[in-house]
Image (cartoon, rainbow, N blue to C red; front, side, top):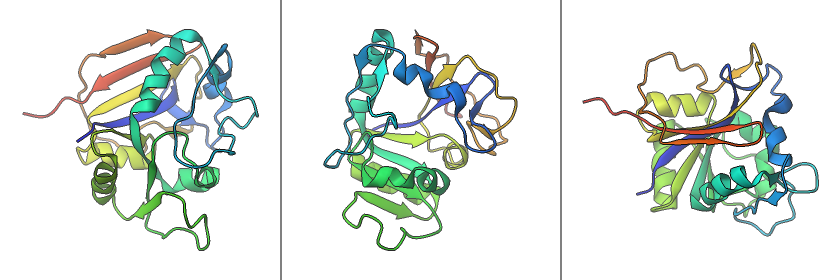
Length: 207
């Protein structure tokens, strides 16, 4: 069974977006290099996840880190709020073969009926479904409210952060409304990119 990794780009003060869901400069590093990132998601292509028409172009250092991470993903788990914001990338995930949406509401009627998206009520059931679909590949959990709930339930194996040197002051927190305490191991990945610091921490299990 593959690892469950909670991931997002984040400001140095712990926000993944501002109060209005704007990301400001958080994603600038995706377009500041000369190395193309290859999307590995399911679907027939044609959807521009970069929203700029030119795809993702990272520095060589960041691309060497990010590409294997994307290649390892089998399933993305996201909350309903994120799904609604991006309209589920029109049924075409940027990485992995499936997307599991944590939601109390069903899939919108008529929305891309053939898309490999699964709407599951509850974080435990969502992770179980994601691991079933992913097999030995990685389950990538988007940070935010759903991600924080999955962490609180003890279902996250690793936390991955792409830290951008900006202070938001307020906004949407990386761990959502999670207010507990969770120890992490020392980072086993520390990579300095261009205007981004890639960090990965394994979750320390309680004895």
